[in-house]
Amino acid sequence: MAEKGEEMKLLATWFSPFAHRVIWVLKMKGIEYEYVEEDLGNKSPLLLQSNPVHKKVPVLIHNGKPLAESLVIVQYLDSISKSSPVLPDDPYQRAMALFWTNFVEEKFTDHVRKVLFLGGEEQAAGAKGAEAALATLEEQLAKKKSKFFGGESIGLVDIALGYISVWLEVIEEVGGIKVFDSEKFPCLAKWMQDFLEIPTVKENHPNKADLIPYLRGLRQLGPAGAFQQH
Ligand SMILES: N[C@@H](CCC(=O)N[C@@H](CS)C(=O)NCC(=O)O)C(=O)O
Image 1: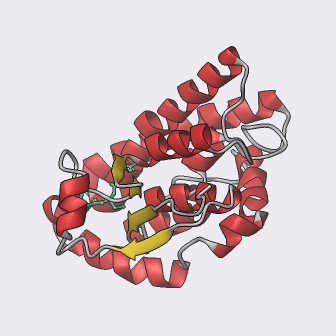
Image 2 (image 1 turned 45 degrees about the horizontal axis):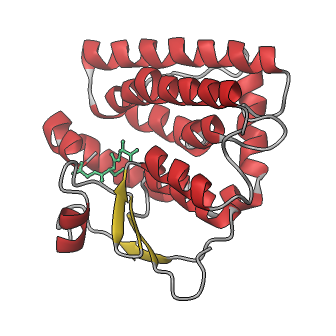
């Protein structure tokens, strides 16, 4: 995959942590694809047609069929390519991986958006929520006693949470508020280091030096402007 004659096109934008989830999996699985950079201030007709519900990147178009939502795309890729699996075969382990992936999105990522784009009490509540979610994830990882949430290699939960290995510091710097304390979260701190060591990840992550000014600009747009784009 993608076999000769197959068309795999990824609509993405350079900084998107959600697009990076898909890129890591495409690369890990050795799936060839065409990368199309989207300008979120002037979305292409192809993006609008392919993801009419959310109008967001990433979108993957496989042989003309569009798929949206990073974690849906990752699961689709896992079902069409058996190499470097991200979900276990065992039904219970698989269900648990989906449970924790949902937890990352609902209890962590949603709060992180508030830390990045809001101020005052709303931002403080976001930081508190994000920190509480990290505490739960720390506990899970400590119990697992494995290098990654997926075991000795990365799985869906690692892919969902992986963006924090670069983004946490950036979020704290741009938001001007602390969320992560490596003394409180030693397993996650080690996990972030190990995650960043994975060659596919290392080579496909935005630069902190590029992200910080870009996100500062978005933050200045205020919650409405920033949330519209992200
Ligand atoms: N839940 C979505 C989030 C995607 C998302 O928020 N993408 C942002 C870029 S990081 C976007 O396309 N924003 C455009 C907009 O909101 O108009 C996923 O996991 O794919």
